[in-house]
Image 1 (cartoon, rainbow, N blue to C red):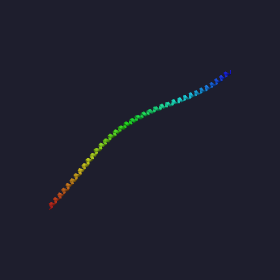
Image 2: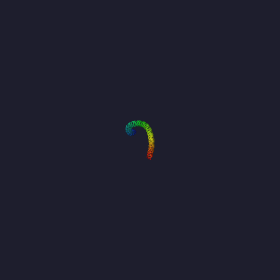
Image 3: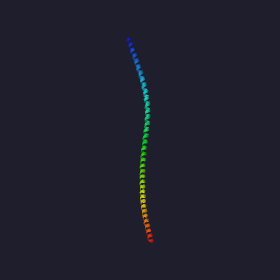
Image 4: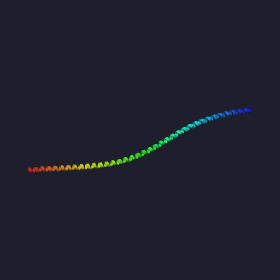
Length: 133
């Protein structure tokens, strides 16, 4: 009977150890399930954030493309406008040169006419003197 009591005591001790081990495993399972739920929730949040980021990247890429196209068009328009203004500037400079040349010719004509007038006045005054004598 002693052997039976010893076996019974060992079995009881072993049963207590196994029950404690079972409780620890159940607690560990519960902790792991809680952690898993938290990970799943956070993963869902990450997926949402990634979707949002991907949408923002697409918007950014589209806007960059639009801005690049607009800059290219603005550059072409600026270059065309600059060429037009350069041509207008050359045309105006040519007109200014023509006006200056014309002005110089008019001044020469005026000097020639003044010289002719002086010569005629001198001639007239000489004729008057000759007639008086």
